[in-house]
Image 1: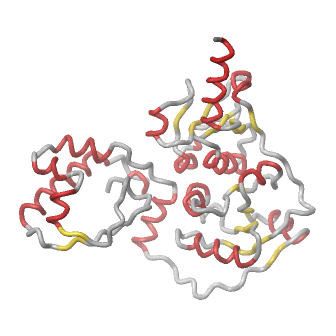
Image 2: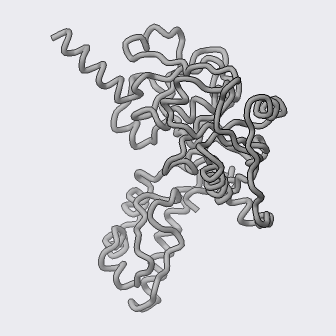
Image 3: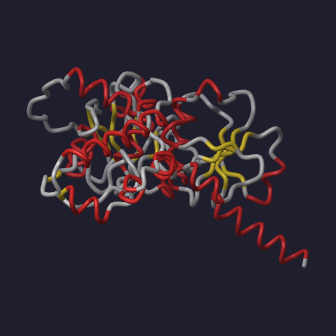
Length: 316
């Protein structure tokens, strides 16, 4: 398993990749070309890079067209391993829990009941009792004013992916969704349930009457003025290697909550991604977990690049 580390095990990517090459060799040597192959993963899965969208294929077709065909044909094991592992996505936090749940079996939930609506005092009481508010508004609305301790998880295509980064059913057993209406809340609850997050107890449509605060930010021009700051780049390793802010530490957003023991609480942390979307999710989770000195880099890496270009133009 190339993602064995996600289950809390050792990083076994390299020996597993070599075993995968050997398995391919044995398979192609012993089975005829007409054998059908039905993939267990499809396009868009977080379980690997550039996964194809075809519903089925054959060994013969794969031998003729697959990226790995020449490596197997030329018995280039190391070349196969290098190509396979280059650019693989980092495993998000929930993969370890997903593996354990799949082995043990998920509980039967039955038909979900309609979610109750909370507002004002009832919402405040639920939060005081330990419920976590999942704010599904666009990140710009969250940044302008949000409930302290709430999580920013915009209701878009990446909602479930990002939820898997920052929500833990054991740590966050009770969730309240801030949504447009009950219909959207039910749809988002169903999406969360598909990755084993079943703790949604209610929904809200307004934050009226609750204390709100803006997201703390720092501009690229003033980044150097933040004393003793850790610059945390939550992009993928591939993005980081293509270009990064000098001195920044790369830690993929899906692994940040795995690595809390390596992040300081006694000094500022300035977080960024490429354009700000992933960063907003991670920064909200860190603040919710007691990291009180988390700042978001305005414009993220793209903003820093733009500022660097403007600075060079000004010096020219």
